Length: 301
Image (cartoon, rainbow, N blue to C red; front, side, top):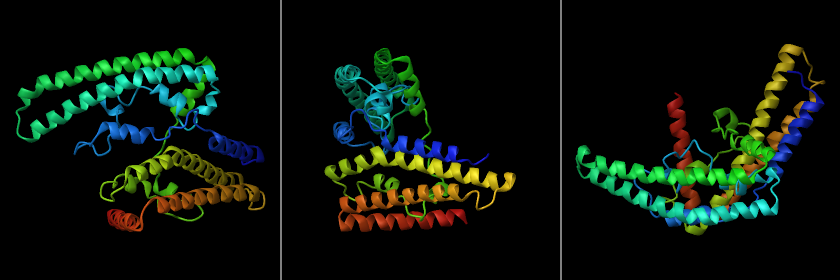
């Protein structure tokens, strides 16, 4: 692949677009509110996504309201105020029904789990499974109507834009991508979010952490993807096009600027986490990070 200033400029524009894109409607404390309404998580559902996990089809259908209003790149759609107001009304009409249904389904699932853990016979619980499946199907049918309603509000071009950012892969950071910055720094959010009870994270702290999760991962992945693309392009230019360090100087400088931005974002995120957590909580997080790092090294060997 030939490295040119045009490619570098295109990548730069792509990154600036990703960073400038904002949600049409900031999600605010909605996640915290949903978590509060959901109540305590089941012992086998520590990573519960409420209410999404209680749909019959929870992964392979779009949640169109969230994608058009709250997705970090939803401003790319160019929705008019009238369109936004219509979608907000759909949300206002639909969410109470969804929450009510999801809570009922969750209650049934937890009761079934408790009975099975207490020694119930599988054959005696088949009707309970059918009842849960029926309620999940009804909730998913409501979901289909919601998708159709939102789709009808969007213009054809807007639907294509939505598909482009909704279908973009949110890749799990590989070991290579973890090292994509100018300085190798830890990525504490996964361990932090899976240890909220052990670290005694308060509701207010959870809201602040959710605000980080709503914006930082998208920004980080965009920059990591760019760094990976640039590295590959430079490698191809050196190995197959016999490019020199002089001819690639501007591309290498641009790669370094992207890596610097990755490191700056990581440092700022860690600083935000440090300000949110108490000293005791942060010490607990560091202990968990060290344990995870040792476990990873042991696994590698």
